Length: 137
Image (cartoon, rainbow, N blue to C red; front, top):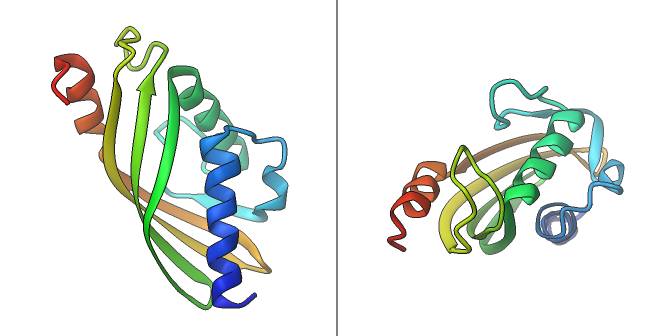
């Protein structure tokens, strides 16, 4: 996979899996040995946990991830993102507000055999929660 193909692959993954919440094709993106280092405590750090996390997120939000910057080298890709999260369901005890909150973050992917084998993320969930509870965007 070329660097550009890697970038396109990650963009497609974000569009289908995160923005649409369509996990029916997850096996097209994830290596069988996939490990996710960023899932919340209590979820398994594999594709099962990722499916659960996506379902929970989409149950509370209509998310849209915008890739602001993408840097890649063979087998690795990091993206700087802005997530626009429209709050439509209960989230951490916060009833739906209808607000759309924008938060920054980073996602780092390691690829093997043309699939994502490892993922790390740093998403500003504290700011998300604060903006939902105060209404200050």
